[in-house]
Length: 402
Image 1 (tube, rainbow, N blue to C red):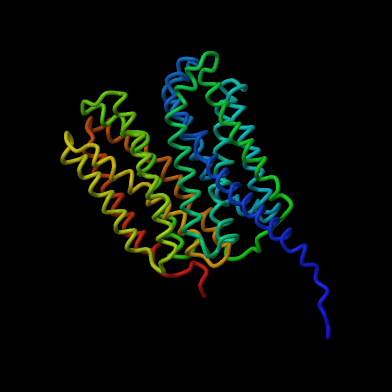
Image 2: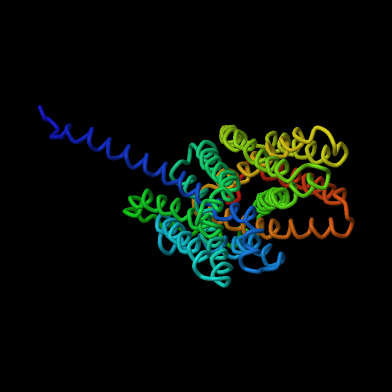
């Protein structure tokens, strides 16, 4: 009788080691996602303090929130290339390290450092934006919906948290807006420490379907859905408080409405991709999401002085559902992690270019008409176009199918 010489004592230890790696990977993904918004969403509430302290004009101060979006446009297509050169794990670690540098540069570099730091922050956030969906596609191929919901929720929670506590942090004695900015470097450092064990691996994606992606109708439908939902989000963040103030709401009340819009999006951010990942087609989810957008914007347009909380709630739910759907599409519509990262880079490059133009265009319309009707009509049109692109992006197909 032949007895296999297997050391069974090592099996529990090996299992525990694998489990530990899995937990650290999961936590690392959450912490990377948590770092993708606070350094940007925390700027808006402090613009007044920044202009007062530095003497910047309102136009230049507005550029502070636009620069990261422009950086998204430039660096989103580059992120997959960097991942193929140095590996996805190192590219994500590099993005966290760059966030620390960019965050601190905004504080110690004077006015030039402030603008350069914002652009660097945007570039590093773009890396995380693009590579996280690809990482999920690679390491959680059967749980794309669940993991997308988890990291999108983390991203949204810290975005809303940053908007809410940036001013209280600045009001702490001796902190000011610079101290408020610098505090978010701590979150990036924690992310780096938790992500360190992943650097033992160096997964270099195999190059597949890059140029052909730009000729794919499905890829463009995913791209337009991503871009149009980004347009609505950044327009809402930039102009919803002003719209509500012009209709008689207090400054504090309008600020809370903006916070509510972001917090109410959290359940949808988690649940919608969870459902999407279990379906071959996501067209029904797209239709329900756009219906909420249409009702919300139509309510603000035609029933402006009542039920405001309901309209903002519907816009928030639709916003949470649309961003998580857009991110889930990168994995659901591709067969490999490399294709997912390329699709993510393409969609986010074009998408954030639309997002950067959104607040400027809506502000221009408001200045020309001196009213909010035309901007809200534009948002209704954008929602309808989002429906058309989303129905295409939600069909059961792959951008890299033969």
